[in-house]
Amino acid sequence: MRVHPLLLSLALAACAAMPVANGAQATAPGSAAPGGAAGTTSGATVPDAALLGGYHWQLTQAANRYGQRIAALFVRPLKPLQLDFGGDRISVRNGCNGMGGNYRIVNGQLVVGPMTHTMMACADFALNRLDGLIGVRLSVRPAITVTRSGGTPLLHLHTAAGDTLVFTGLPTPETRYGGPGVTEFLEVSPQSVPCNHPPMSSPQCLDVREVHYDANGLKTGTPGNWHVLLHGIEGYTHQPGVRNVLRVQRYTVQHPPAGTPTNAYVLDMVVESELVRH
Figure 1 (cartoon, rainbow, N blue to C red):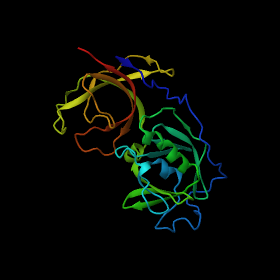
Figure 2: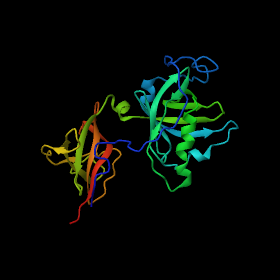
Figure 3: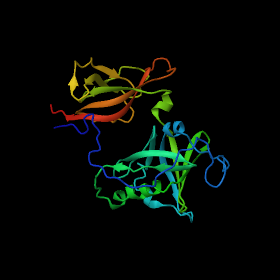
Figure 4: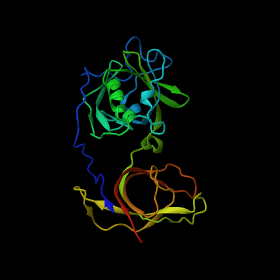
């Protein structure tokens, strides 16, 4: 069995637009939020694009104007709704469909442009309606601020109807490793191999080699040599007997402990997957 689920072209071919309010000119980061000066509410400030883009924002609290928890936004506790910001784009993950669109911060409000989304229909009714529930709250220009709990940033969205959504910031790999990653494609052998490296807690490691693709998504050139990947790939769980080709981001580890790898790998997407029968 061989599948190529998203071979290098993640086109949202079947997209639908969700109308939202149009915005005016964006204000400078840290400008006043509606109803008062920035930073006057429990240390709250209006975030800039660099702060927003440096974290994955996962929904941890949601309450209506009466303080009641909005349970419908927490369909899958292990996969909370997540906002990601990059450049002038916002993406919503872990709903029924992937959603995304342009955004600006205008007078302390998050202004999201028309959003596109994939066109899946989820069998679970609660999951199926989750896209609409988060989409409508993003479409009404919620006030946006960031506070900190210890060293952890918390993103707050406040709607005019009185809903308050709080997202906890998890640092992106770029934030954790201090810079952008390098895109690579790694073929993962169906069977793991002995690590033979004393610091490793697991006796088995991934056996990988680098492969290459051209601009059209076709394999090109000669694969690299097979080698053991001591610290694995973040976000990837290997299934014995399955050969995968992964698109990964490789990051340089600053000041690694003696005897540990200088590179870290983070899964971007699965390009190929094949069940190998012996």
